[in-house]
Length: 405
Image (tube, rainbow, N blue to C red; front, top):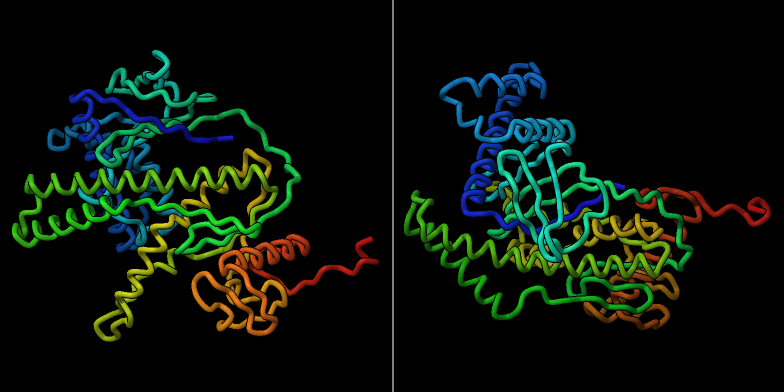
């Protein structure tokens, strides 16, 4: 299987400056290539990777664009290949630009022959990259396989390297352990059908106050300086915000990884809701002709959903399931929080509050999120018994016992 290994880089000051330069060059190549593709689409023509790679090679010989030669050639080619893949997957008009301030610099070395990794001691390793030379990184875990490629990125003011590794692990057989249902919530991040409630505060009260203070300072710097958005004071504020948000983001990822590994180790099938998080967290502002309603309440709900990391938890769950013989099943989320697990009666009034579920038909009481997790598990078992796609929820029924025999 292909898996990833991420390590903290220890660039020298010169290497850090050069990494920022390479990231800026890749961003310029991405944006120029995207604009070129869109212009050709406007004319009814097509521009692909081969022609763009040829033009980049020719542009390096031009004195005006000689700065392109400062970056490794394979890195620029990989940037164009990533653009090609993005345009084919999402469409040329839906691919986003790479911003200087909002997009973290990132570039990939695709040729494994140009990447040499060795361990220096218990805590440090060294990797040789084209035009970078030897770069040290924190050796926090073994590579566990052959390196296929390496990606360098900056996150929260720090530089990291991610190796794509072929670990040699074949497909793992099912572990045969009991299934479990998982409900992702806002007040409680993870609720399971066996009654477990897993949650964590990723932001301390002090960090929340500091985060608000930095955001206010950044907003004031925009109003005071006007169009001068490149002031050193504003850059320093943005850097502090980036480091604080990175710390919060890493806590969230660590919680998701640990919870996901525990679930797939103890259970053979994990049933989750097939939520469309992007649609659920869309803005409610509307347009000038039709302004939205309850915009501030919807914005608060969106922040609460995103702060729990629903999407990241599902990715961690799917990744960990490959190594522990577990299966991830997605079911239709409709009415899972309004259905009584005991009598299957559906009523919005049964959910008295965020945490209390009391059925208006049979009087069954349970934690609201746990009751939803039990319904999710029941839906997953019904779908796997029929053999359908979980989210589709076809109307086929379980075959009769005499036919199944």
